[in-house]
Length: 503
Image (tube, rainbow, N blue to C red; front, top):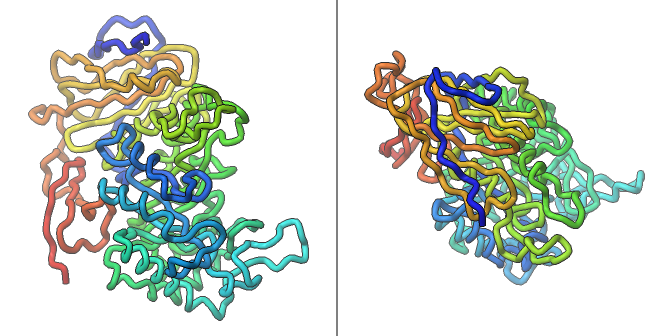
């Protein structure tokens, strides 16, 4: 196979250039800290349901090629902890084998109900309702069953713990704004406020310490479903993660607006489901479509996202091959697909970092010709660069600190699968302006090592003890009230273990 990587010579502010130049300025202004990236373990993609652990073994943990660390599970509606009972073809047991592996590899697992038990609902069944029948009863949680909802979630937590899986978070509802003829439940925004305000205290956080509550995950990450929960003080106290999907709405629009209040109140913002190019027919995504997926990841980060969870793990338009020959010979079962390697640029390098404000002399918009973002993690500054055009550019980066060395990860096509290796960027002396190549139709991760001895470090230095600090548990989840052994992260991205009283 022809090797496509070349060692890149980084030039200082003065140097020879043969391409047009894009200027990127990275500022020493911290934004959100990134918890991580993941996918769903749900019926269909993981058949037999959840028990095939090949996808998680390929995708999860620092030892994997991809580096995912968050897994989403469906909380099936009518299963109540009896191994002999199930709804449809699956039950809570289905996710256990995969969840155990993710947890063993240091990951985060969370559950989302598609519907509460049918007997709790207005239509008496898990189905959301027949959307083709105007007279159908819309499946909603009955108001006289609001007090049963969180005890039902507790039974899920209890069951999973009995099977050796400590669930890290539970959501209220998958797409509460979407009336479906499969398993589903409708909530108006004020329904969710009433449920959380009056009954979320029943989530048993004493028996299951550290479990987080995720908001209803609306179809398009709309403010009418997120803002009311943040505007109500009681709801705000109960909700730890504000979540949503981005079907039909670009991240830099609805999601960015919906992230404003959660960020103000120190909440995490997760994009918990989207499938990109799942309607492409009998083929794998082409490289341009992979670059658009990379832009989606980038735009979610620019919108304030702290966690990105894709839809299925295994599909011809996802991360692991299904083995169906109609999608081509590359779609080998339980083989990593190119989209997984696109995800690895972010999962391997952006997880655990803090995004830095950045600006380029190009317009940032959905499916833009070029996109960028920047992050700090420990002694590293990470710059993501995407060029969807057929033109190569010089990328001139102004950094907030002087850097002494660098590495470059380059992907330029679907044949990249065996070529994801960091290549050195040669820097002869510490500089705070570097110029690198931005190849045509490429996805790039540039990693620069900060020169700690440099006088270029600003007043708010990397060792400034007065800078604000954030705290995380050992799984990387942000803590508003740290207890026990935690990770303390300083404003520069450096981290250390600290201990707090447990009471």
